[in-house]
Length: 289
Image 1 (tube, helix red, strand yellow):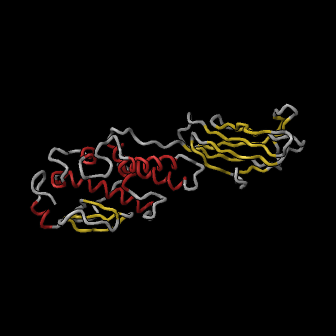
Image 2: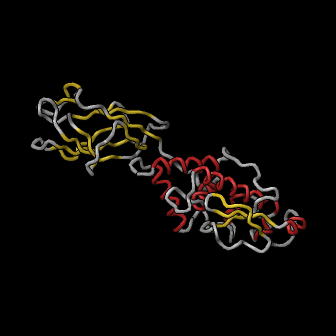
């Protein structure tokens, strides 16, 4: 019986998960019952096995499993089967001593177009929240709630009047508010995003679409949650009776004298406004907090 091994020598289990566009280099250690190399074949048109190093003088061969990017729009299962080969390397029959490998194929996750409200929200939420490898990451549920609360903050700012938050009298949309000065770090020149924030966004997208990454599932769940919040599929009731109007990274300086900390969620401190300020504030009028 031959063994399928990762390049580090670890045995590949009965099932692996890859995302459309991924590749997995691996080794086959052992020969078929006729002392020839086994031929590995896929049952799925999007999965192919590519020889990398096949020396018939060695018992080990190096191959690469590749998943195409086209034609994968939903979760699918492929099987890779080992076949006994003839002297020309052509498959003769299945090798029943080598168990088949199940490959779960996931569709690639992508951000919405940058110049849509959903697109700018999704990028902002990734940039502002603690992801799976951040020391401030608590749990996916906490991250989801923090994202939902951030959307509540933005909508409350628009409702009260963006002028109160130095975002300009004419700021009336979420996209304009996110791009306004002194609102979201790195987004003032959107769709150009500052390098620090862009690198974080790229990291989340890359890891969510890399089935070989050790935290792929966590990143994938995190990104799918982000997209659902940005699309308005996961919304939050008003968590604070006086409304939320700001957030800062946990234990950061307060955003202003008229802000009062409400709660910490997902590594972020969320703030409401003092009653005295709210009682005087009217939409698009009044002073700044």
